[in-house]
Length: 298
Ligand code: C5P
Image: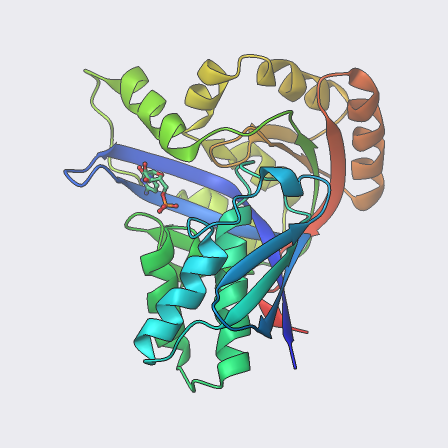
């Protein structure tokens, strides 16, 4: 018997970052949108686990040891219910690795839900979300999906209404960027300045609620973008190529290096993707849309 869970990637349509806290984390106003790029995690009973395997084009970049959030999710759930994490977790990976799209967090949420179904722990939704928050700042959103405002370090979620579908092109870059390194660069770039408290933009929340792509395009903002561009200056060329190709707006996804392009329609997204693909400024492109549901047992 095995259980497979499908889990989406995310893009941050607003990522407002405050000053570093004493614990090293940053308070955020983080507006997440789940988009239709998916990993699938299959949990199968296996003695001596958790054992992690991974398939997909970038599988060789995924750690298979206990640092993998899928393995840590299985261990955390097993510890809470006093059992051994005897499970094999196979990750079929399509979300860019270390790309700023919460791929590792997605696998953590998916593994948690898969093990929960496999072991029939009877854990409540709030309990699962509590374990998610212990695993990482973005893991609760991977579980919930849709659209949500994350505050605190991003783990305290308020679900948001979205009045339509938004069409996106994502440009994948060669190699990943380390999230802690991007936050450290943010700290370096803002040193000696007065970093304001992060607050969600009312205009952006209204644009989401209305499903208005033009209004959303005018309000997209990522405070980590200067840091990601500082560490990876070539991303500026990708952003410029997507804007020139007709995207309504372009931004770095989360801590990068994936870049995100909001488009007027599915047809417009296909055109932007074609031009971006030919521009030579990225490794590959993906066309998708959101919001989509969070982690789901198949
Ligand atoms: O929570 P998570 O383990 O995904 O965070 C990875 C790293 O990103 C943290 O160790 C920290 O360096 C940085 N981070 C942060 N502030 C946040 C979220 C993450 O500084 N709100």
